Amino acid sequence: MTRIDTKFAELKAAGKKAFVSYIMAGDPDPDYSLAVMKGLPAAGVDIIELGVPFTDPMADGPTIQLAGQRALAAGMTLTRTLAMAADFRKVNDTTPIVLMGYYNPIYSRGVDRFLEEARASGIDGLIVVDLPPEEDEELCLPAQAAGLNFIRLATPTTDDKRLPKVLQNTSGFVYYVSITGITGAAAASAADVGPEVARIKAQTDLPVIVGFGIRTPDTAQIIAGVADGCVVGSAIVAEIAKGGPVEGVLDFVRGLAAGAHRA
Image 1: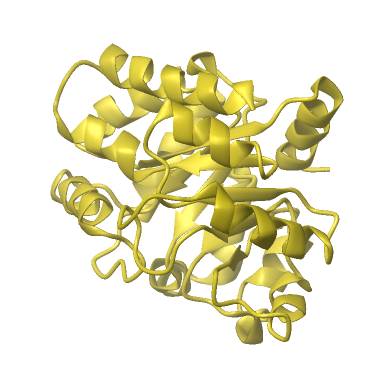
Image 2: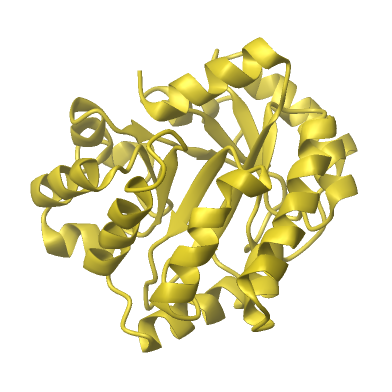
């Protein structure tokens, strides 16, 4: 079992929903970003999604694109992102870390080398948004063989014919994208999300976590209430972009986590 599997087992036993937070590694600089990351578990975060900055983030809206640009300008790389995870592991060996990004930096590094380094850095799972199931032999299957969860995204356009293909090699959890389009583009609706989550859960025993369009504690509560938990990314990244103290960001995260945990 990975840390992700263990975390969901603990949450299920406690009757709690998961709160997952996304931050961009190195935004606005490596030291600030690491300080935020280290504070997330105490703020109520169950799983951390750590974004790898990339020059062509096709699935991300302006908020996360700008975060990636700030991180790249500050010198953040895939190597430094893995080092950031390793630094976090020095103070926390239980909170799962999911590395989220695009395949190009991994391909450039070499899959075998990347997976070895990711494991050594304390990474538990991967979300690589530009690798469809047809390319599972590229990274998904090697990652699972190396002991990492490979988390797949399902969307409102993933129909019943496509869904089994999406689910076939997914592990850890299923990430349901609540809206069509890019991150931060619209608000999630429980009326739309609930039936879709039920449709996915009818075909898998994996937890289903909903992301995109969640910005407030109330929305976190509502969306987590129709799923196994929720993800907040753009709203947290926007708070970081304000340039306030780390504790202010963590206070914002604390409110979101409390909302999800009320579900």
